[in-house]
Length: 389
Image (cartoon, rainbow, N blue to C red):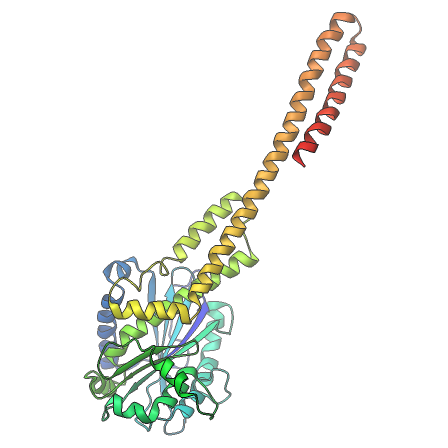
């Protein structure tokens, strides 16, 4: 499963027609996936989040990959997951035929920049659609999930000869040099799977869901060429993590390059930030222990925690700068109001005295009034400016 994060232009509500090159998946496949996904979402996200309709899934259909070599996937089932904040996640499911475990081959498949890689060919097909709905032909982040099933092996015995390759696949490491045993052990120790015969790992460059023959859902999924039901809770959690990261990155870019220009803009921006951070404040951490562990690990590994801190720091800095500028303007306004009203008051006093002395000399009275106001204003400016500075 390839996950491509992109922005989303305002006003998108779905595809009016099926884009060129896509065909509908078999009815049995679509019906089974909808049922499995609905059950997994209810388990992971809970009914309250689902009813809020913050996410929407838009299936595009099946994309023929052409004449690919025998071990490679022959087609891709593509969907677009959108979020109300204005970000989206392309989901590309690539079922491959049974084959020997070969991490080097699969690492090459998952390279989105490879000219002949599976991921690269898929994105080239999606980039034109992405330009229409996102305004850019490029994705902002990429996270592949390798779903592997061992139909005739026990994980513990199998892992003894494939631990190095497993970690290399997680890292998407193209080098042939072996990793240090303590490094491999440390990576495998981050396993989040609570089931016997399973490994669930998330890294900065990819994620991995591996189960042995004990996974009873694998055979049914293989017959329908769908992700196994046992992998869907992990996949849904990864979706939320990718959405969190995309929302946070969008907020940070907005704060860094197009900050608010008024107090009203700042209030609206803060409201948008709080709305955008709804997922970060515990949506994926509120149901099962598995998702709790995976979400916490994923937020750390994918840099979501650091990005959240950067957003909040930037928001505080923008808020401080804007409010400080407004306080400075208010102080200057108070300064000039004090000068104007003070000088005017002194001018009126001078006018009263001048009228008593020069009862018939209107010009002289005005001269005293204006002169007294100007001199007193200059004195007030000189006195108050030093205090302000």
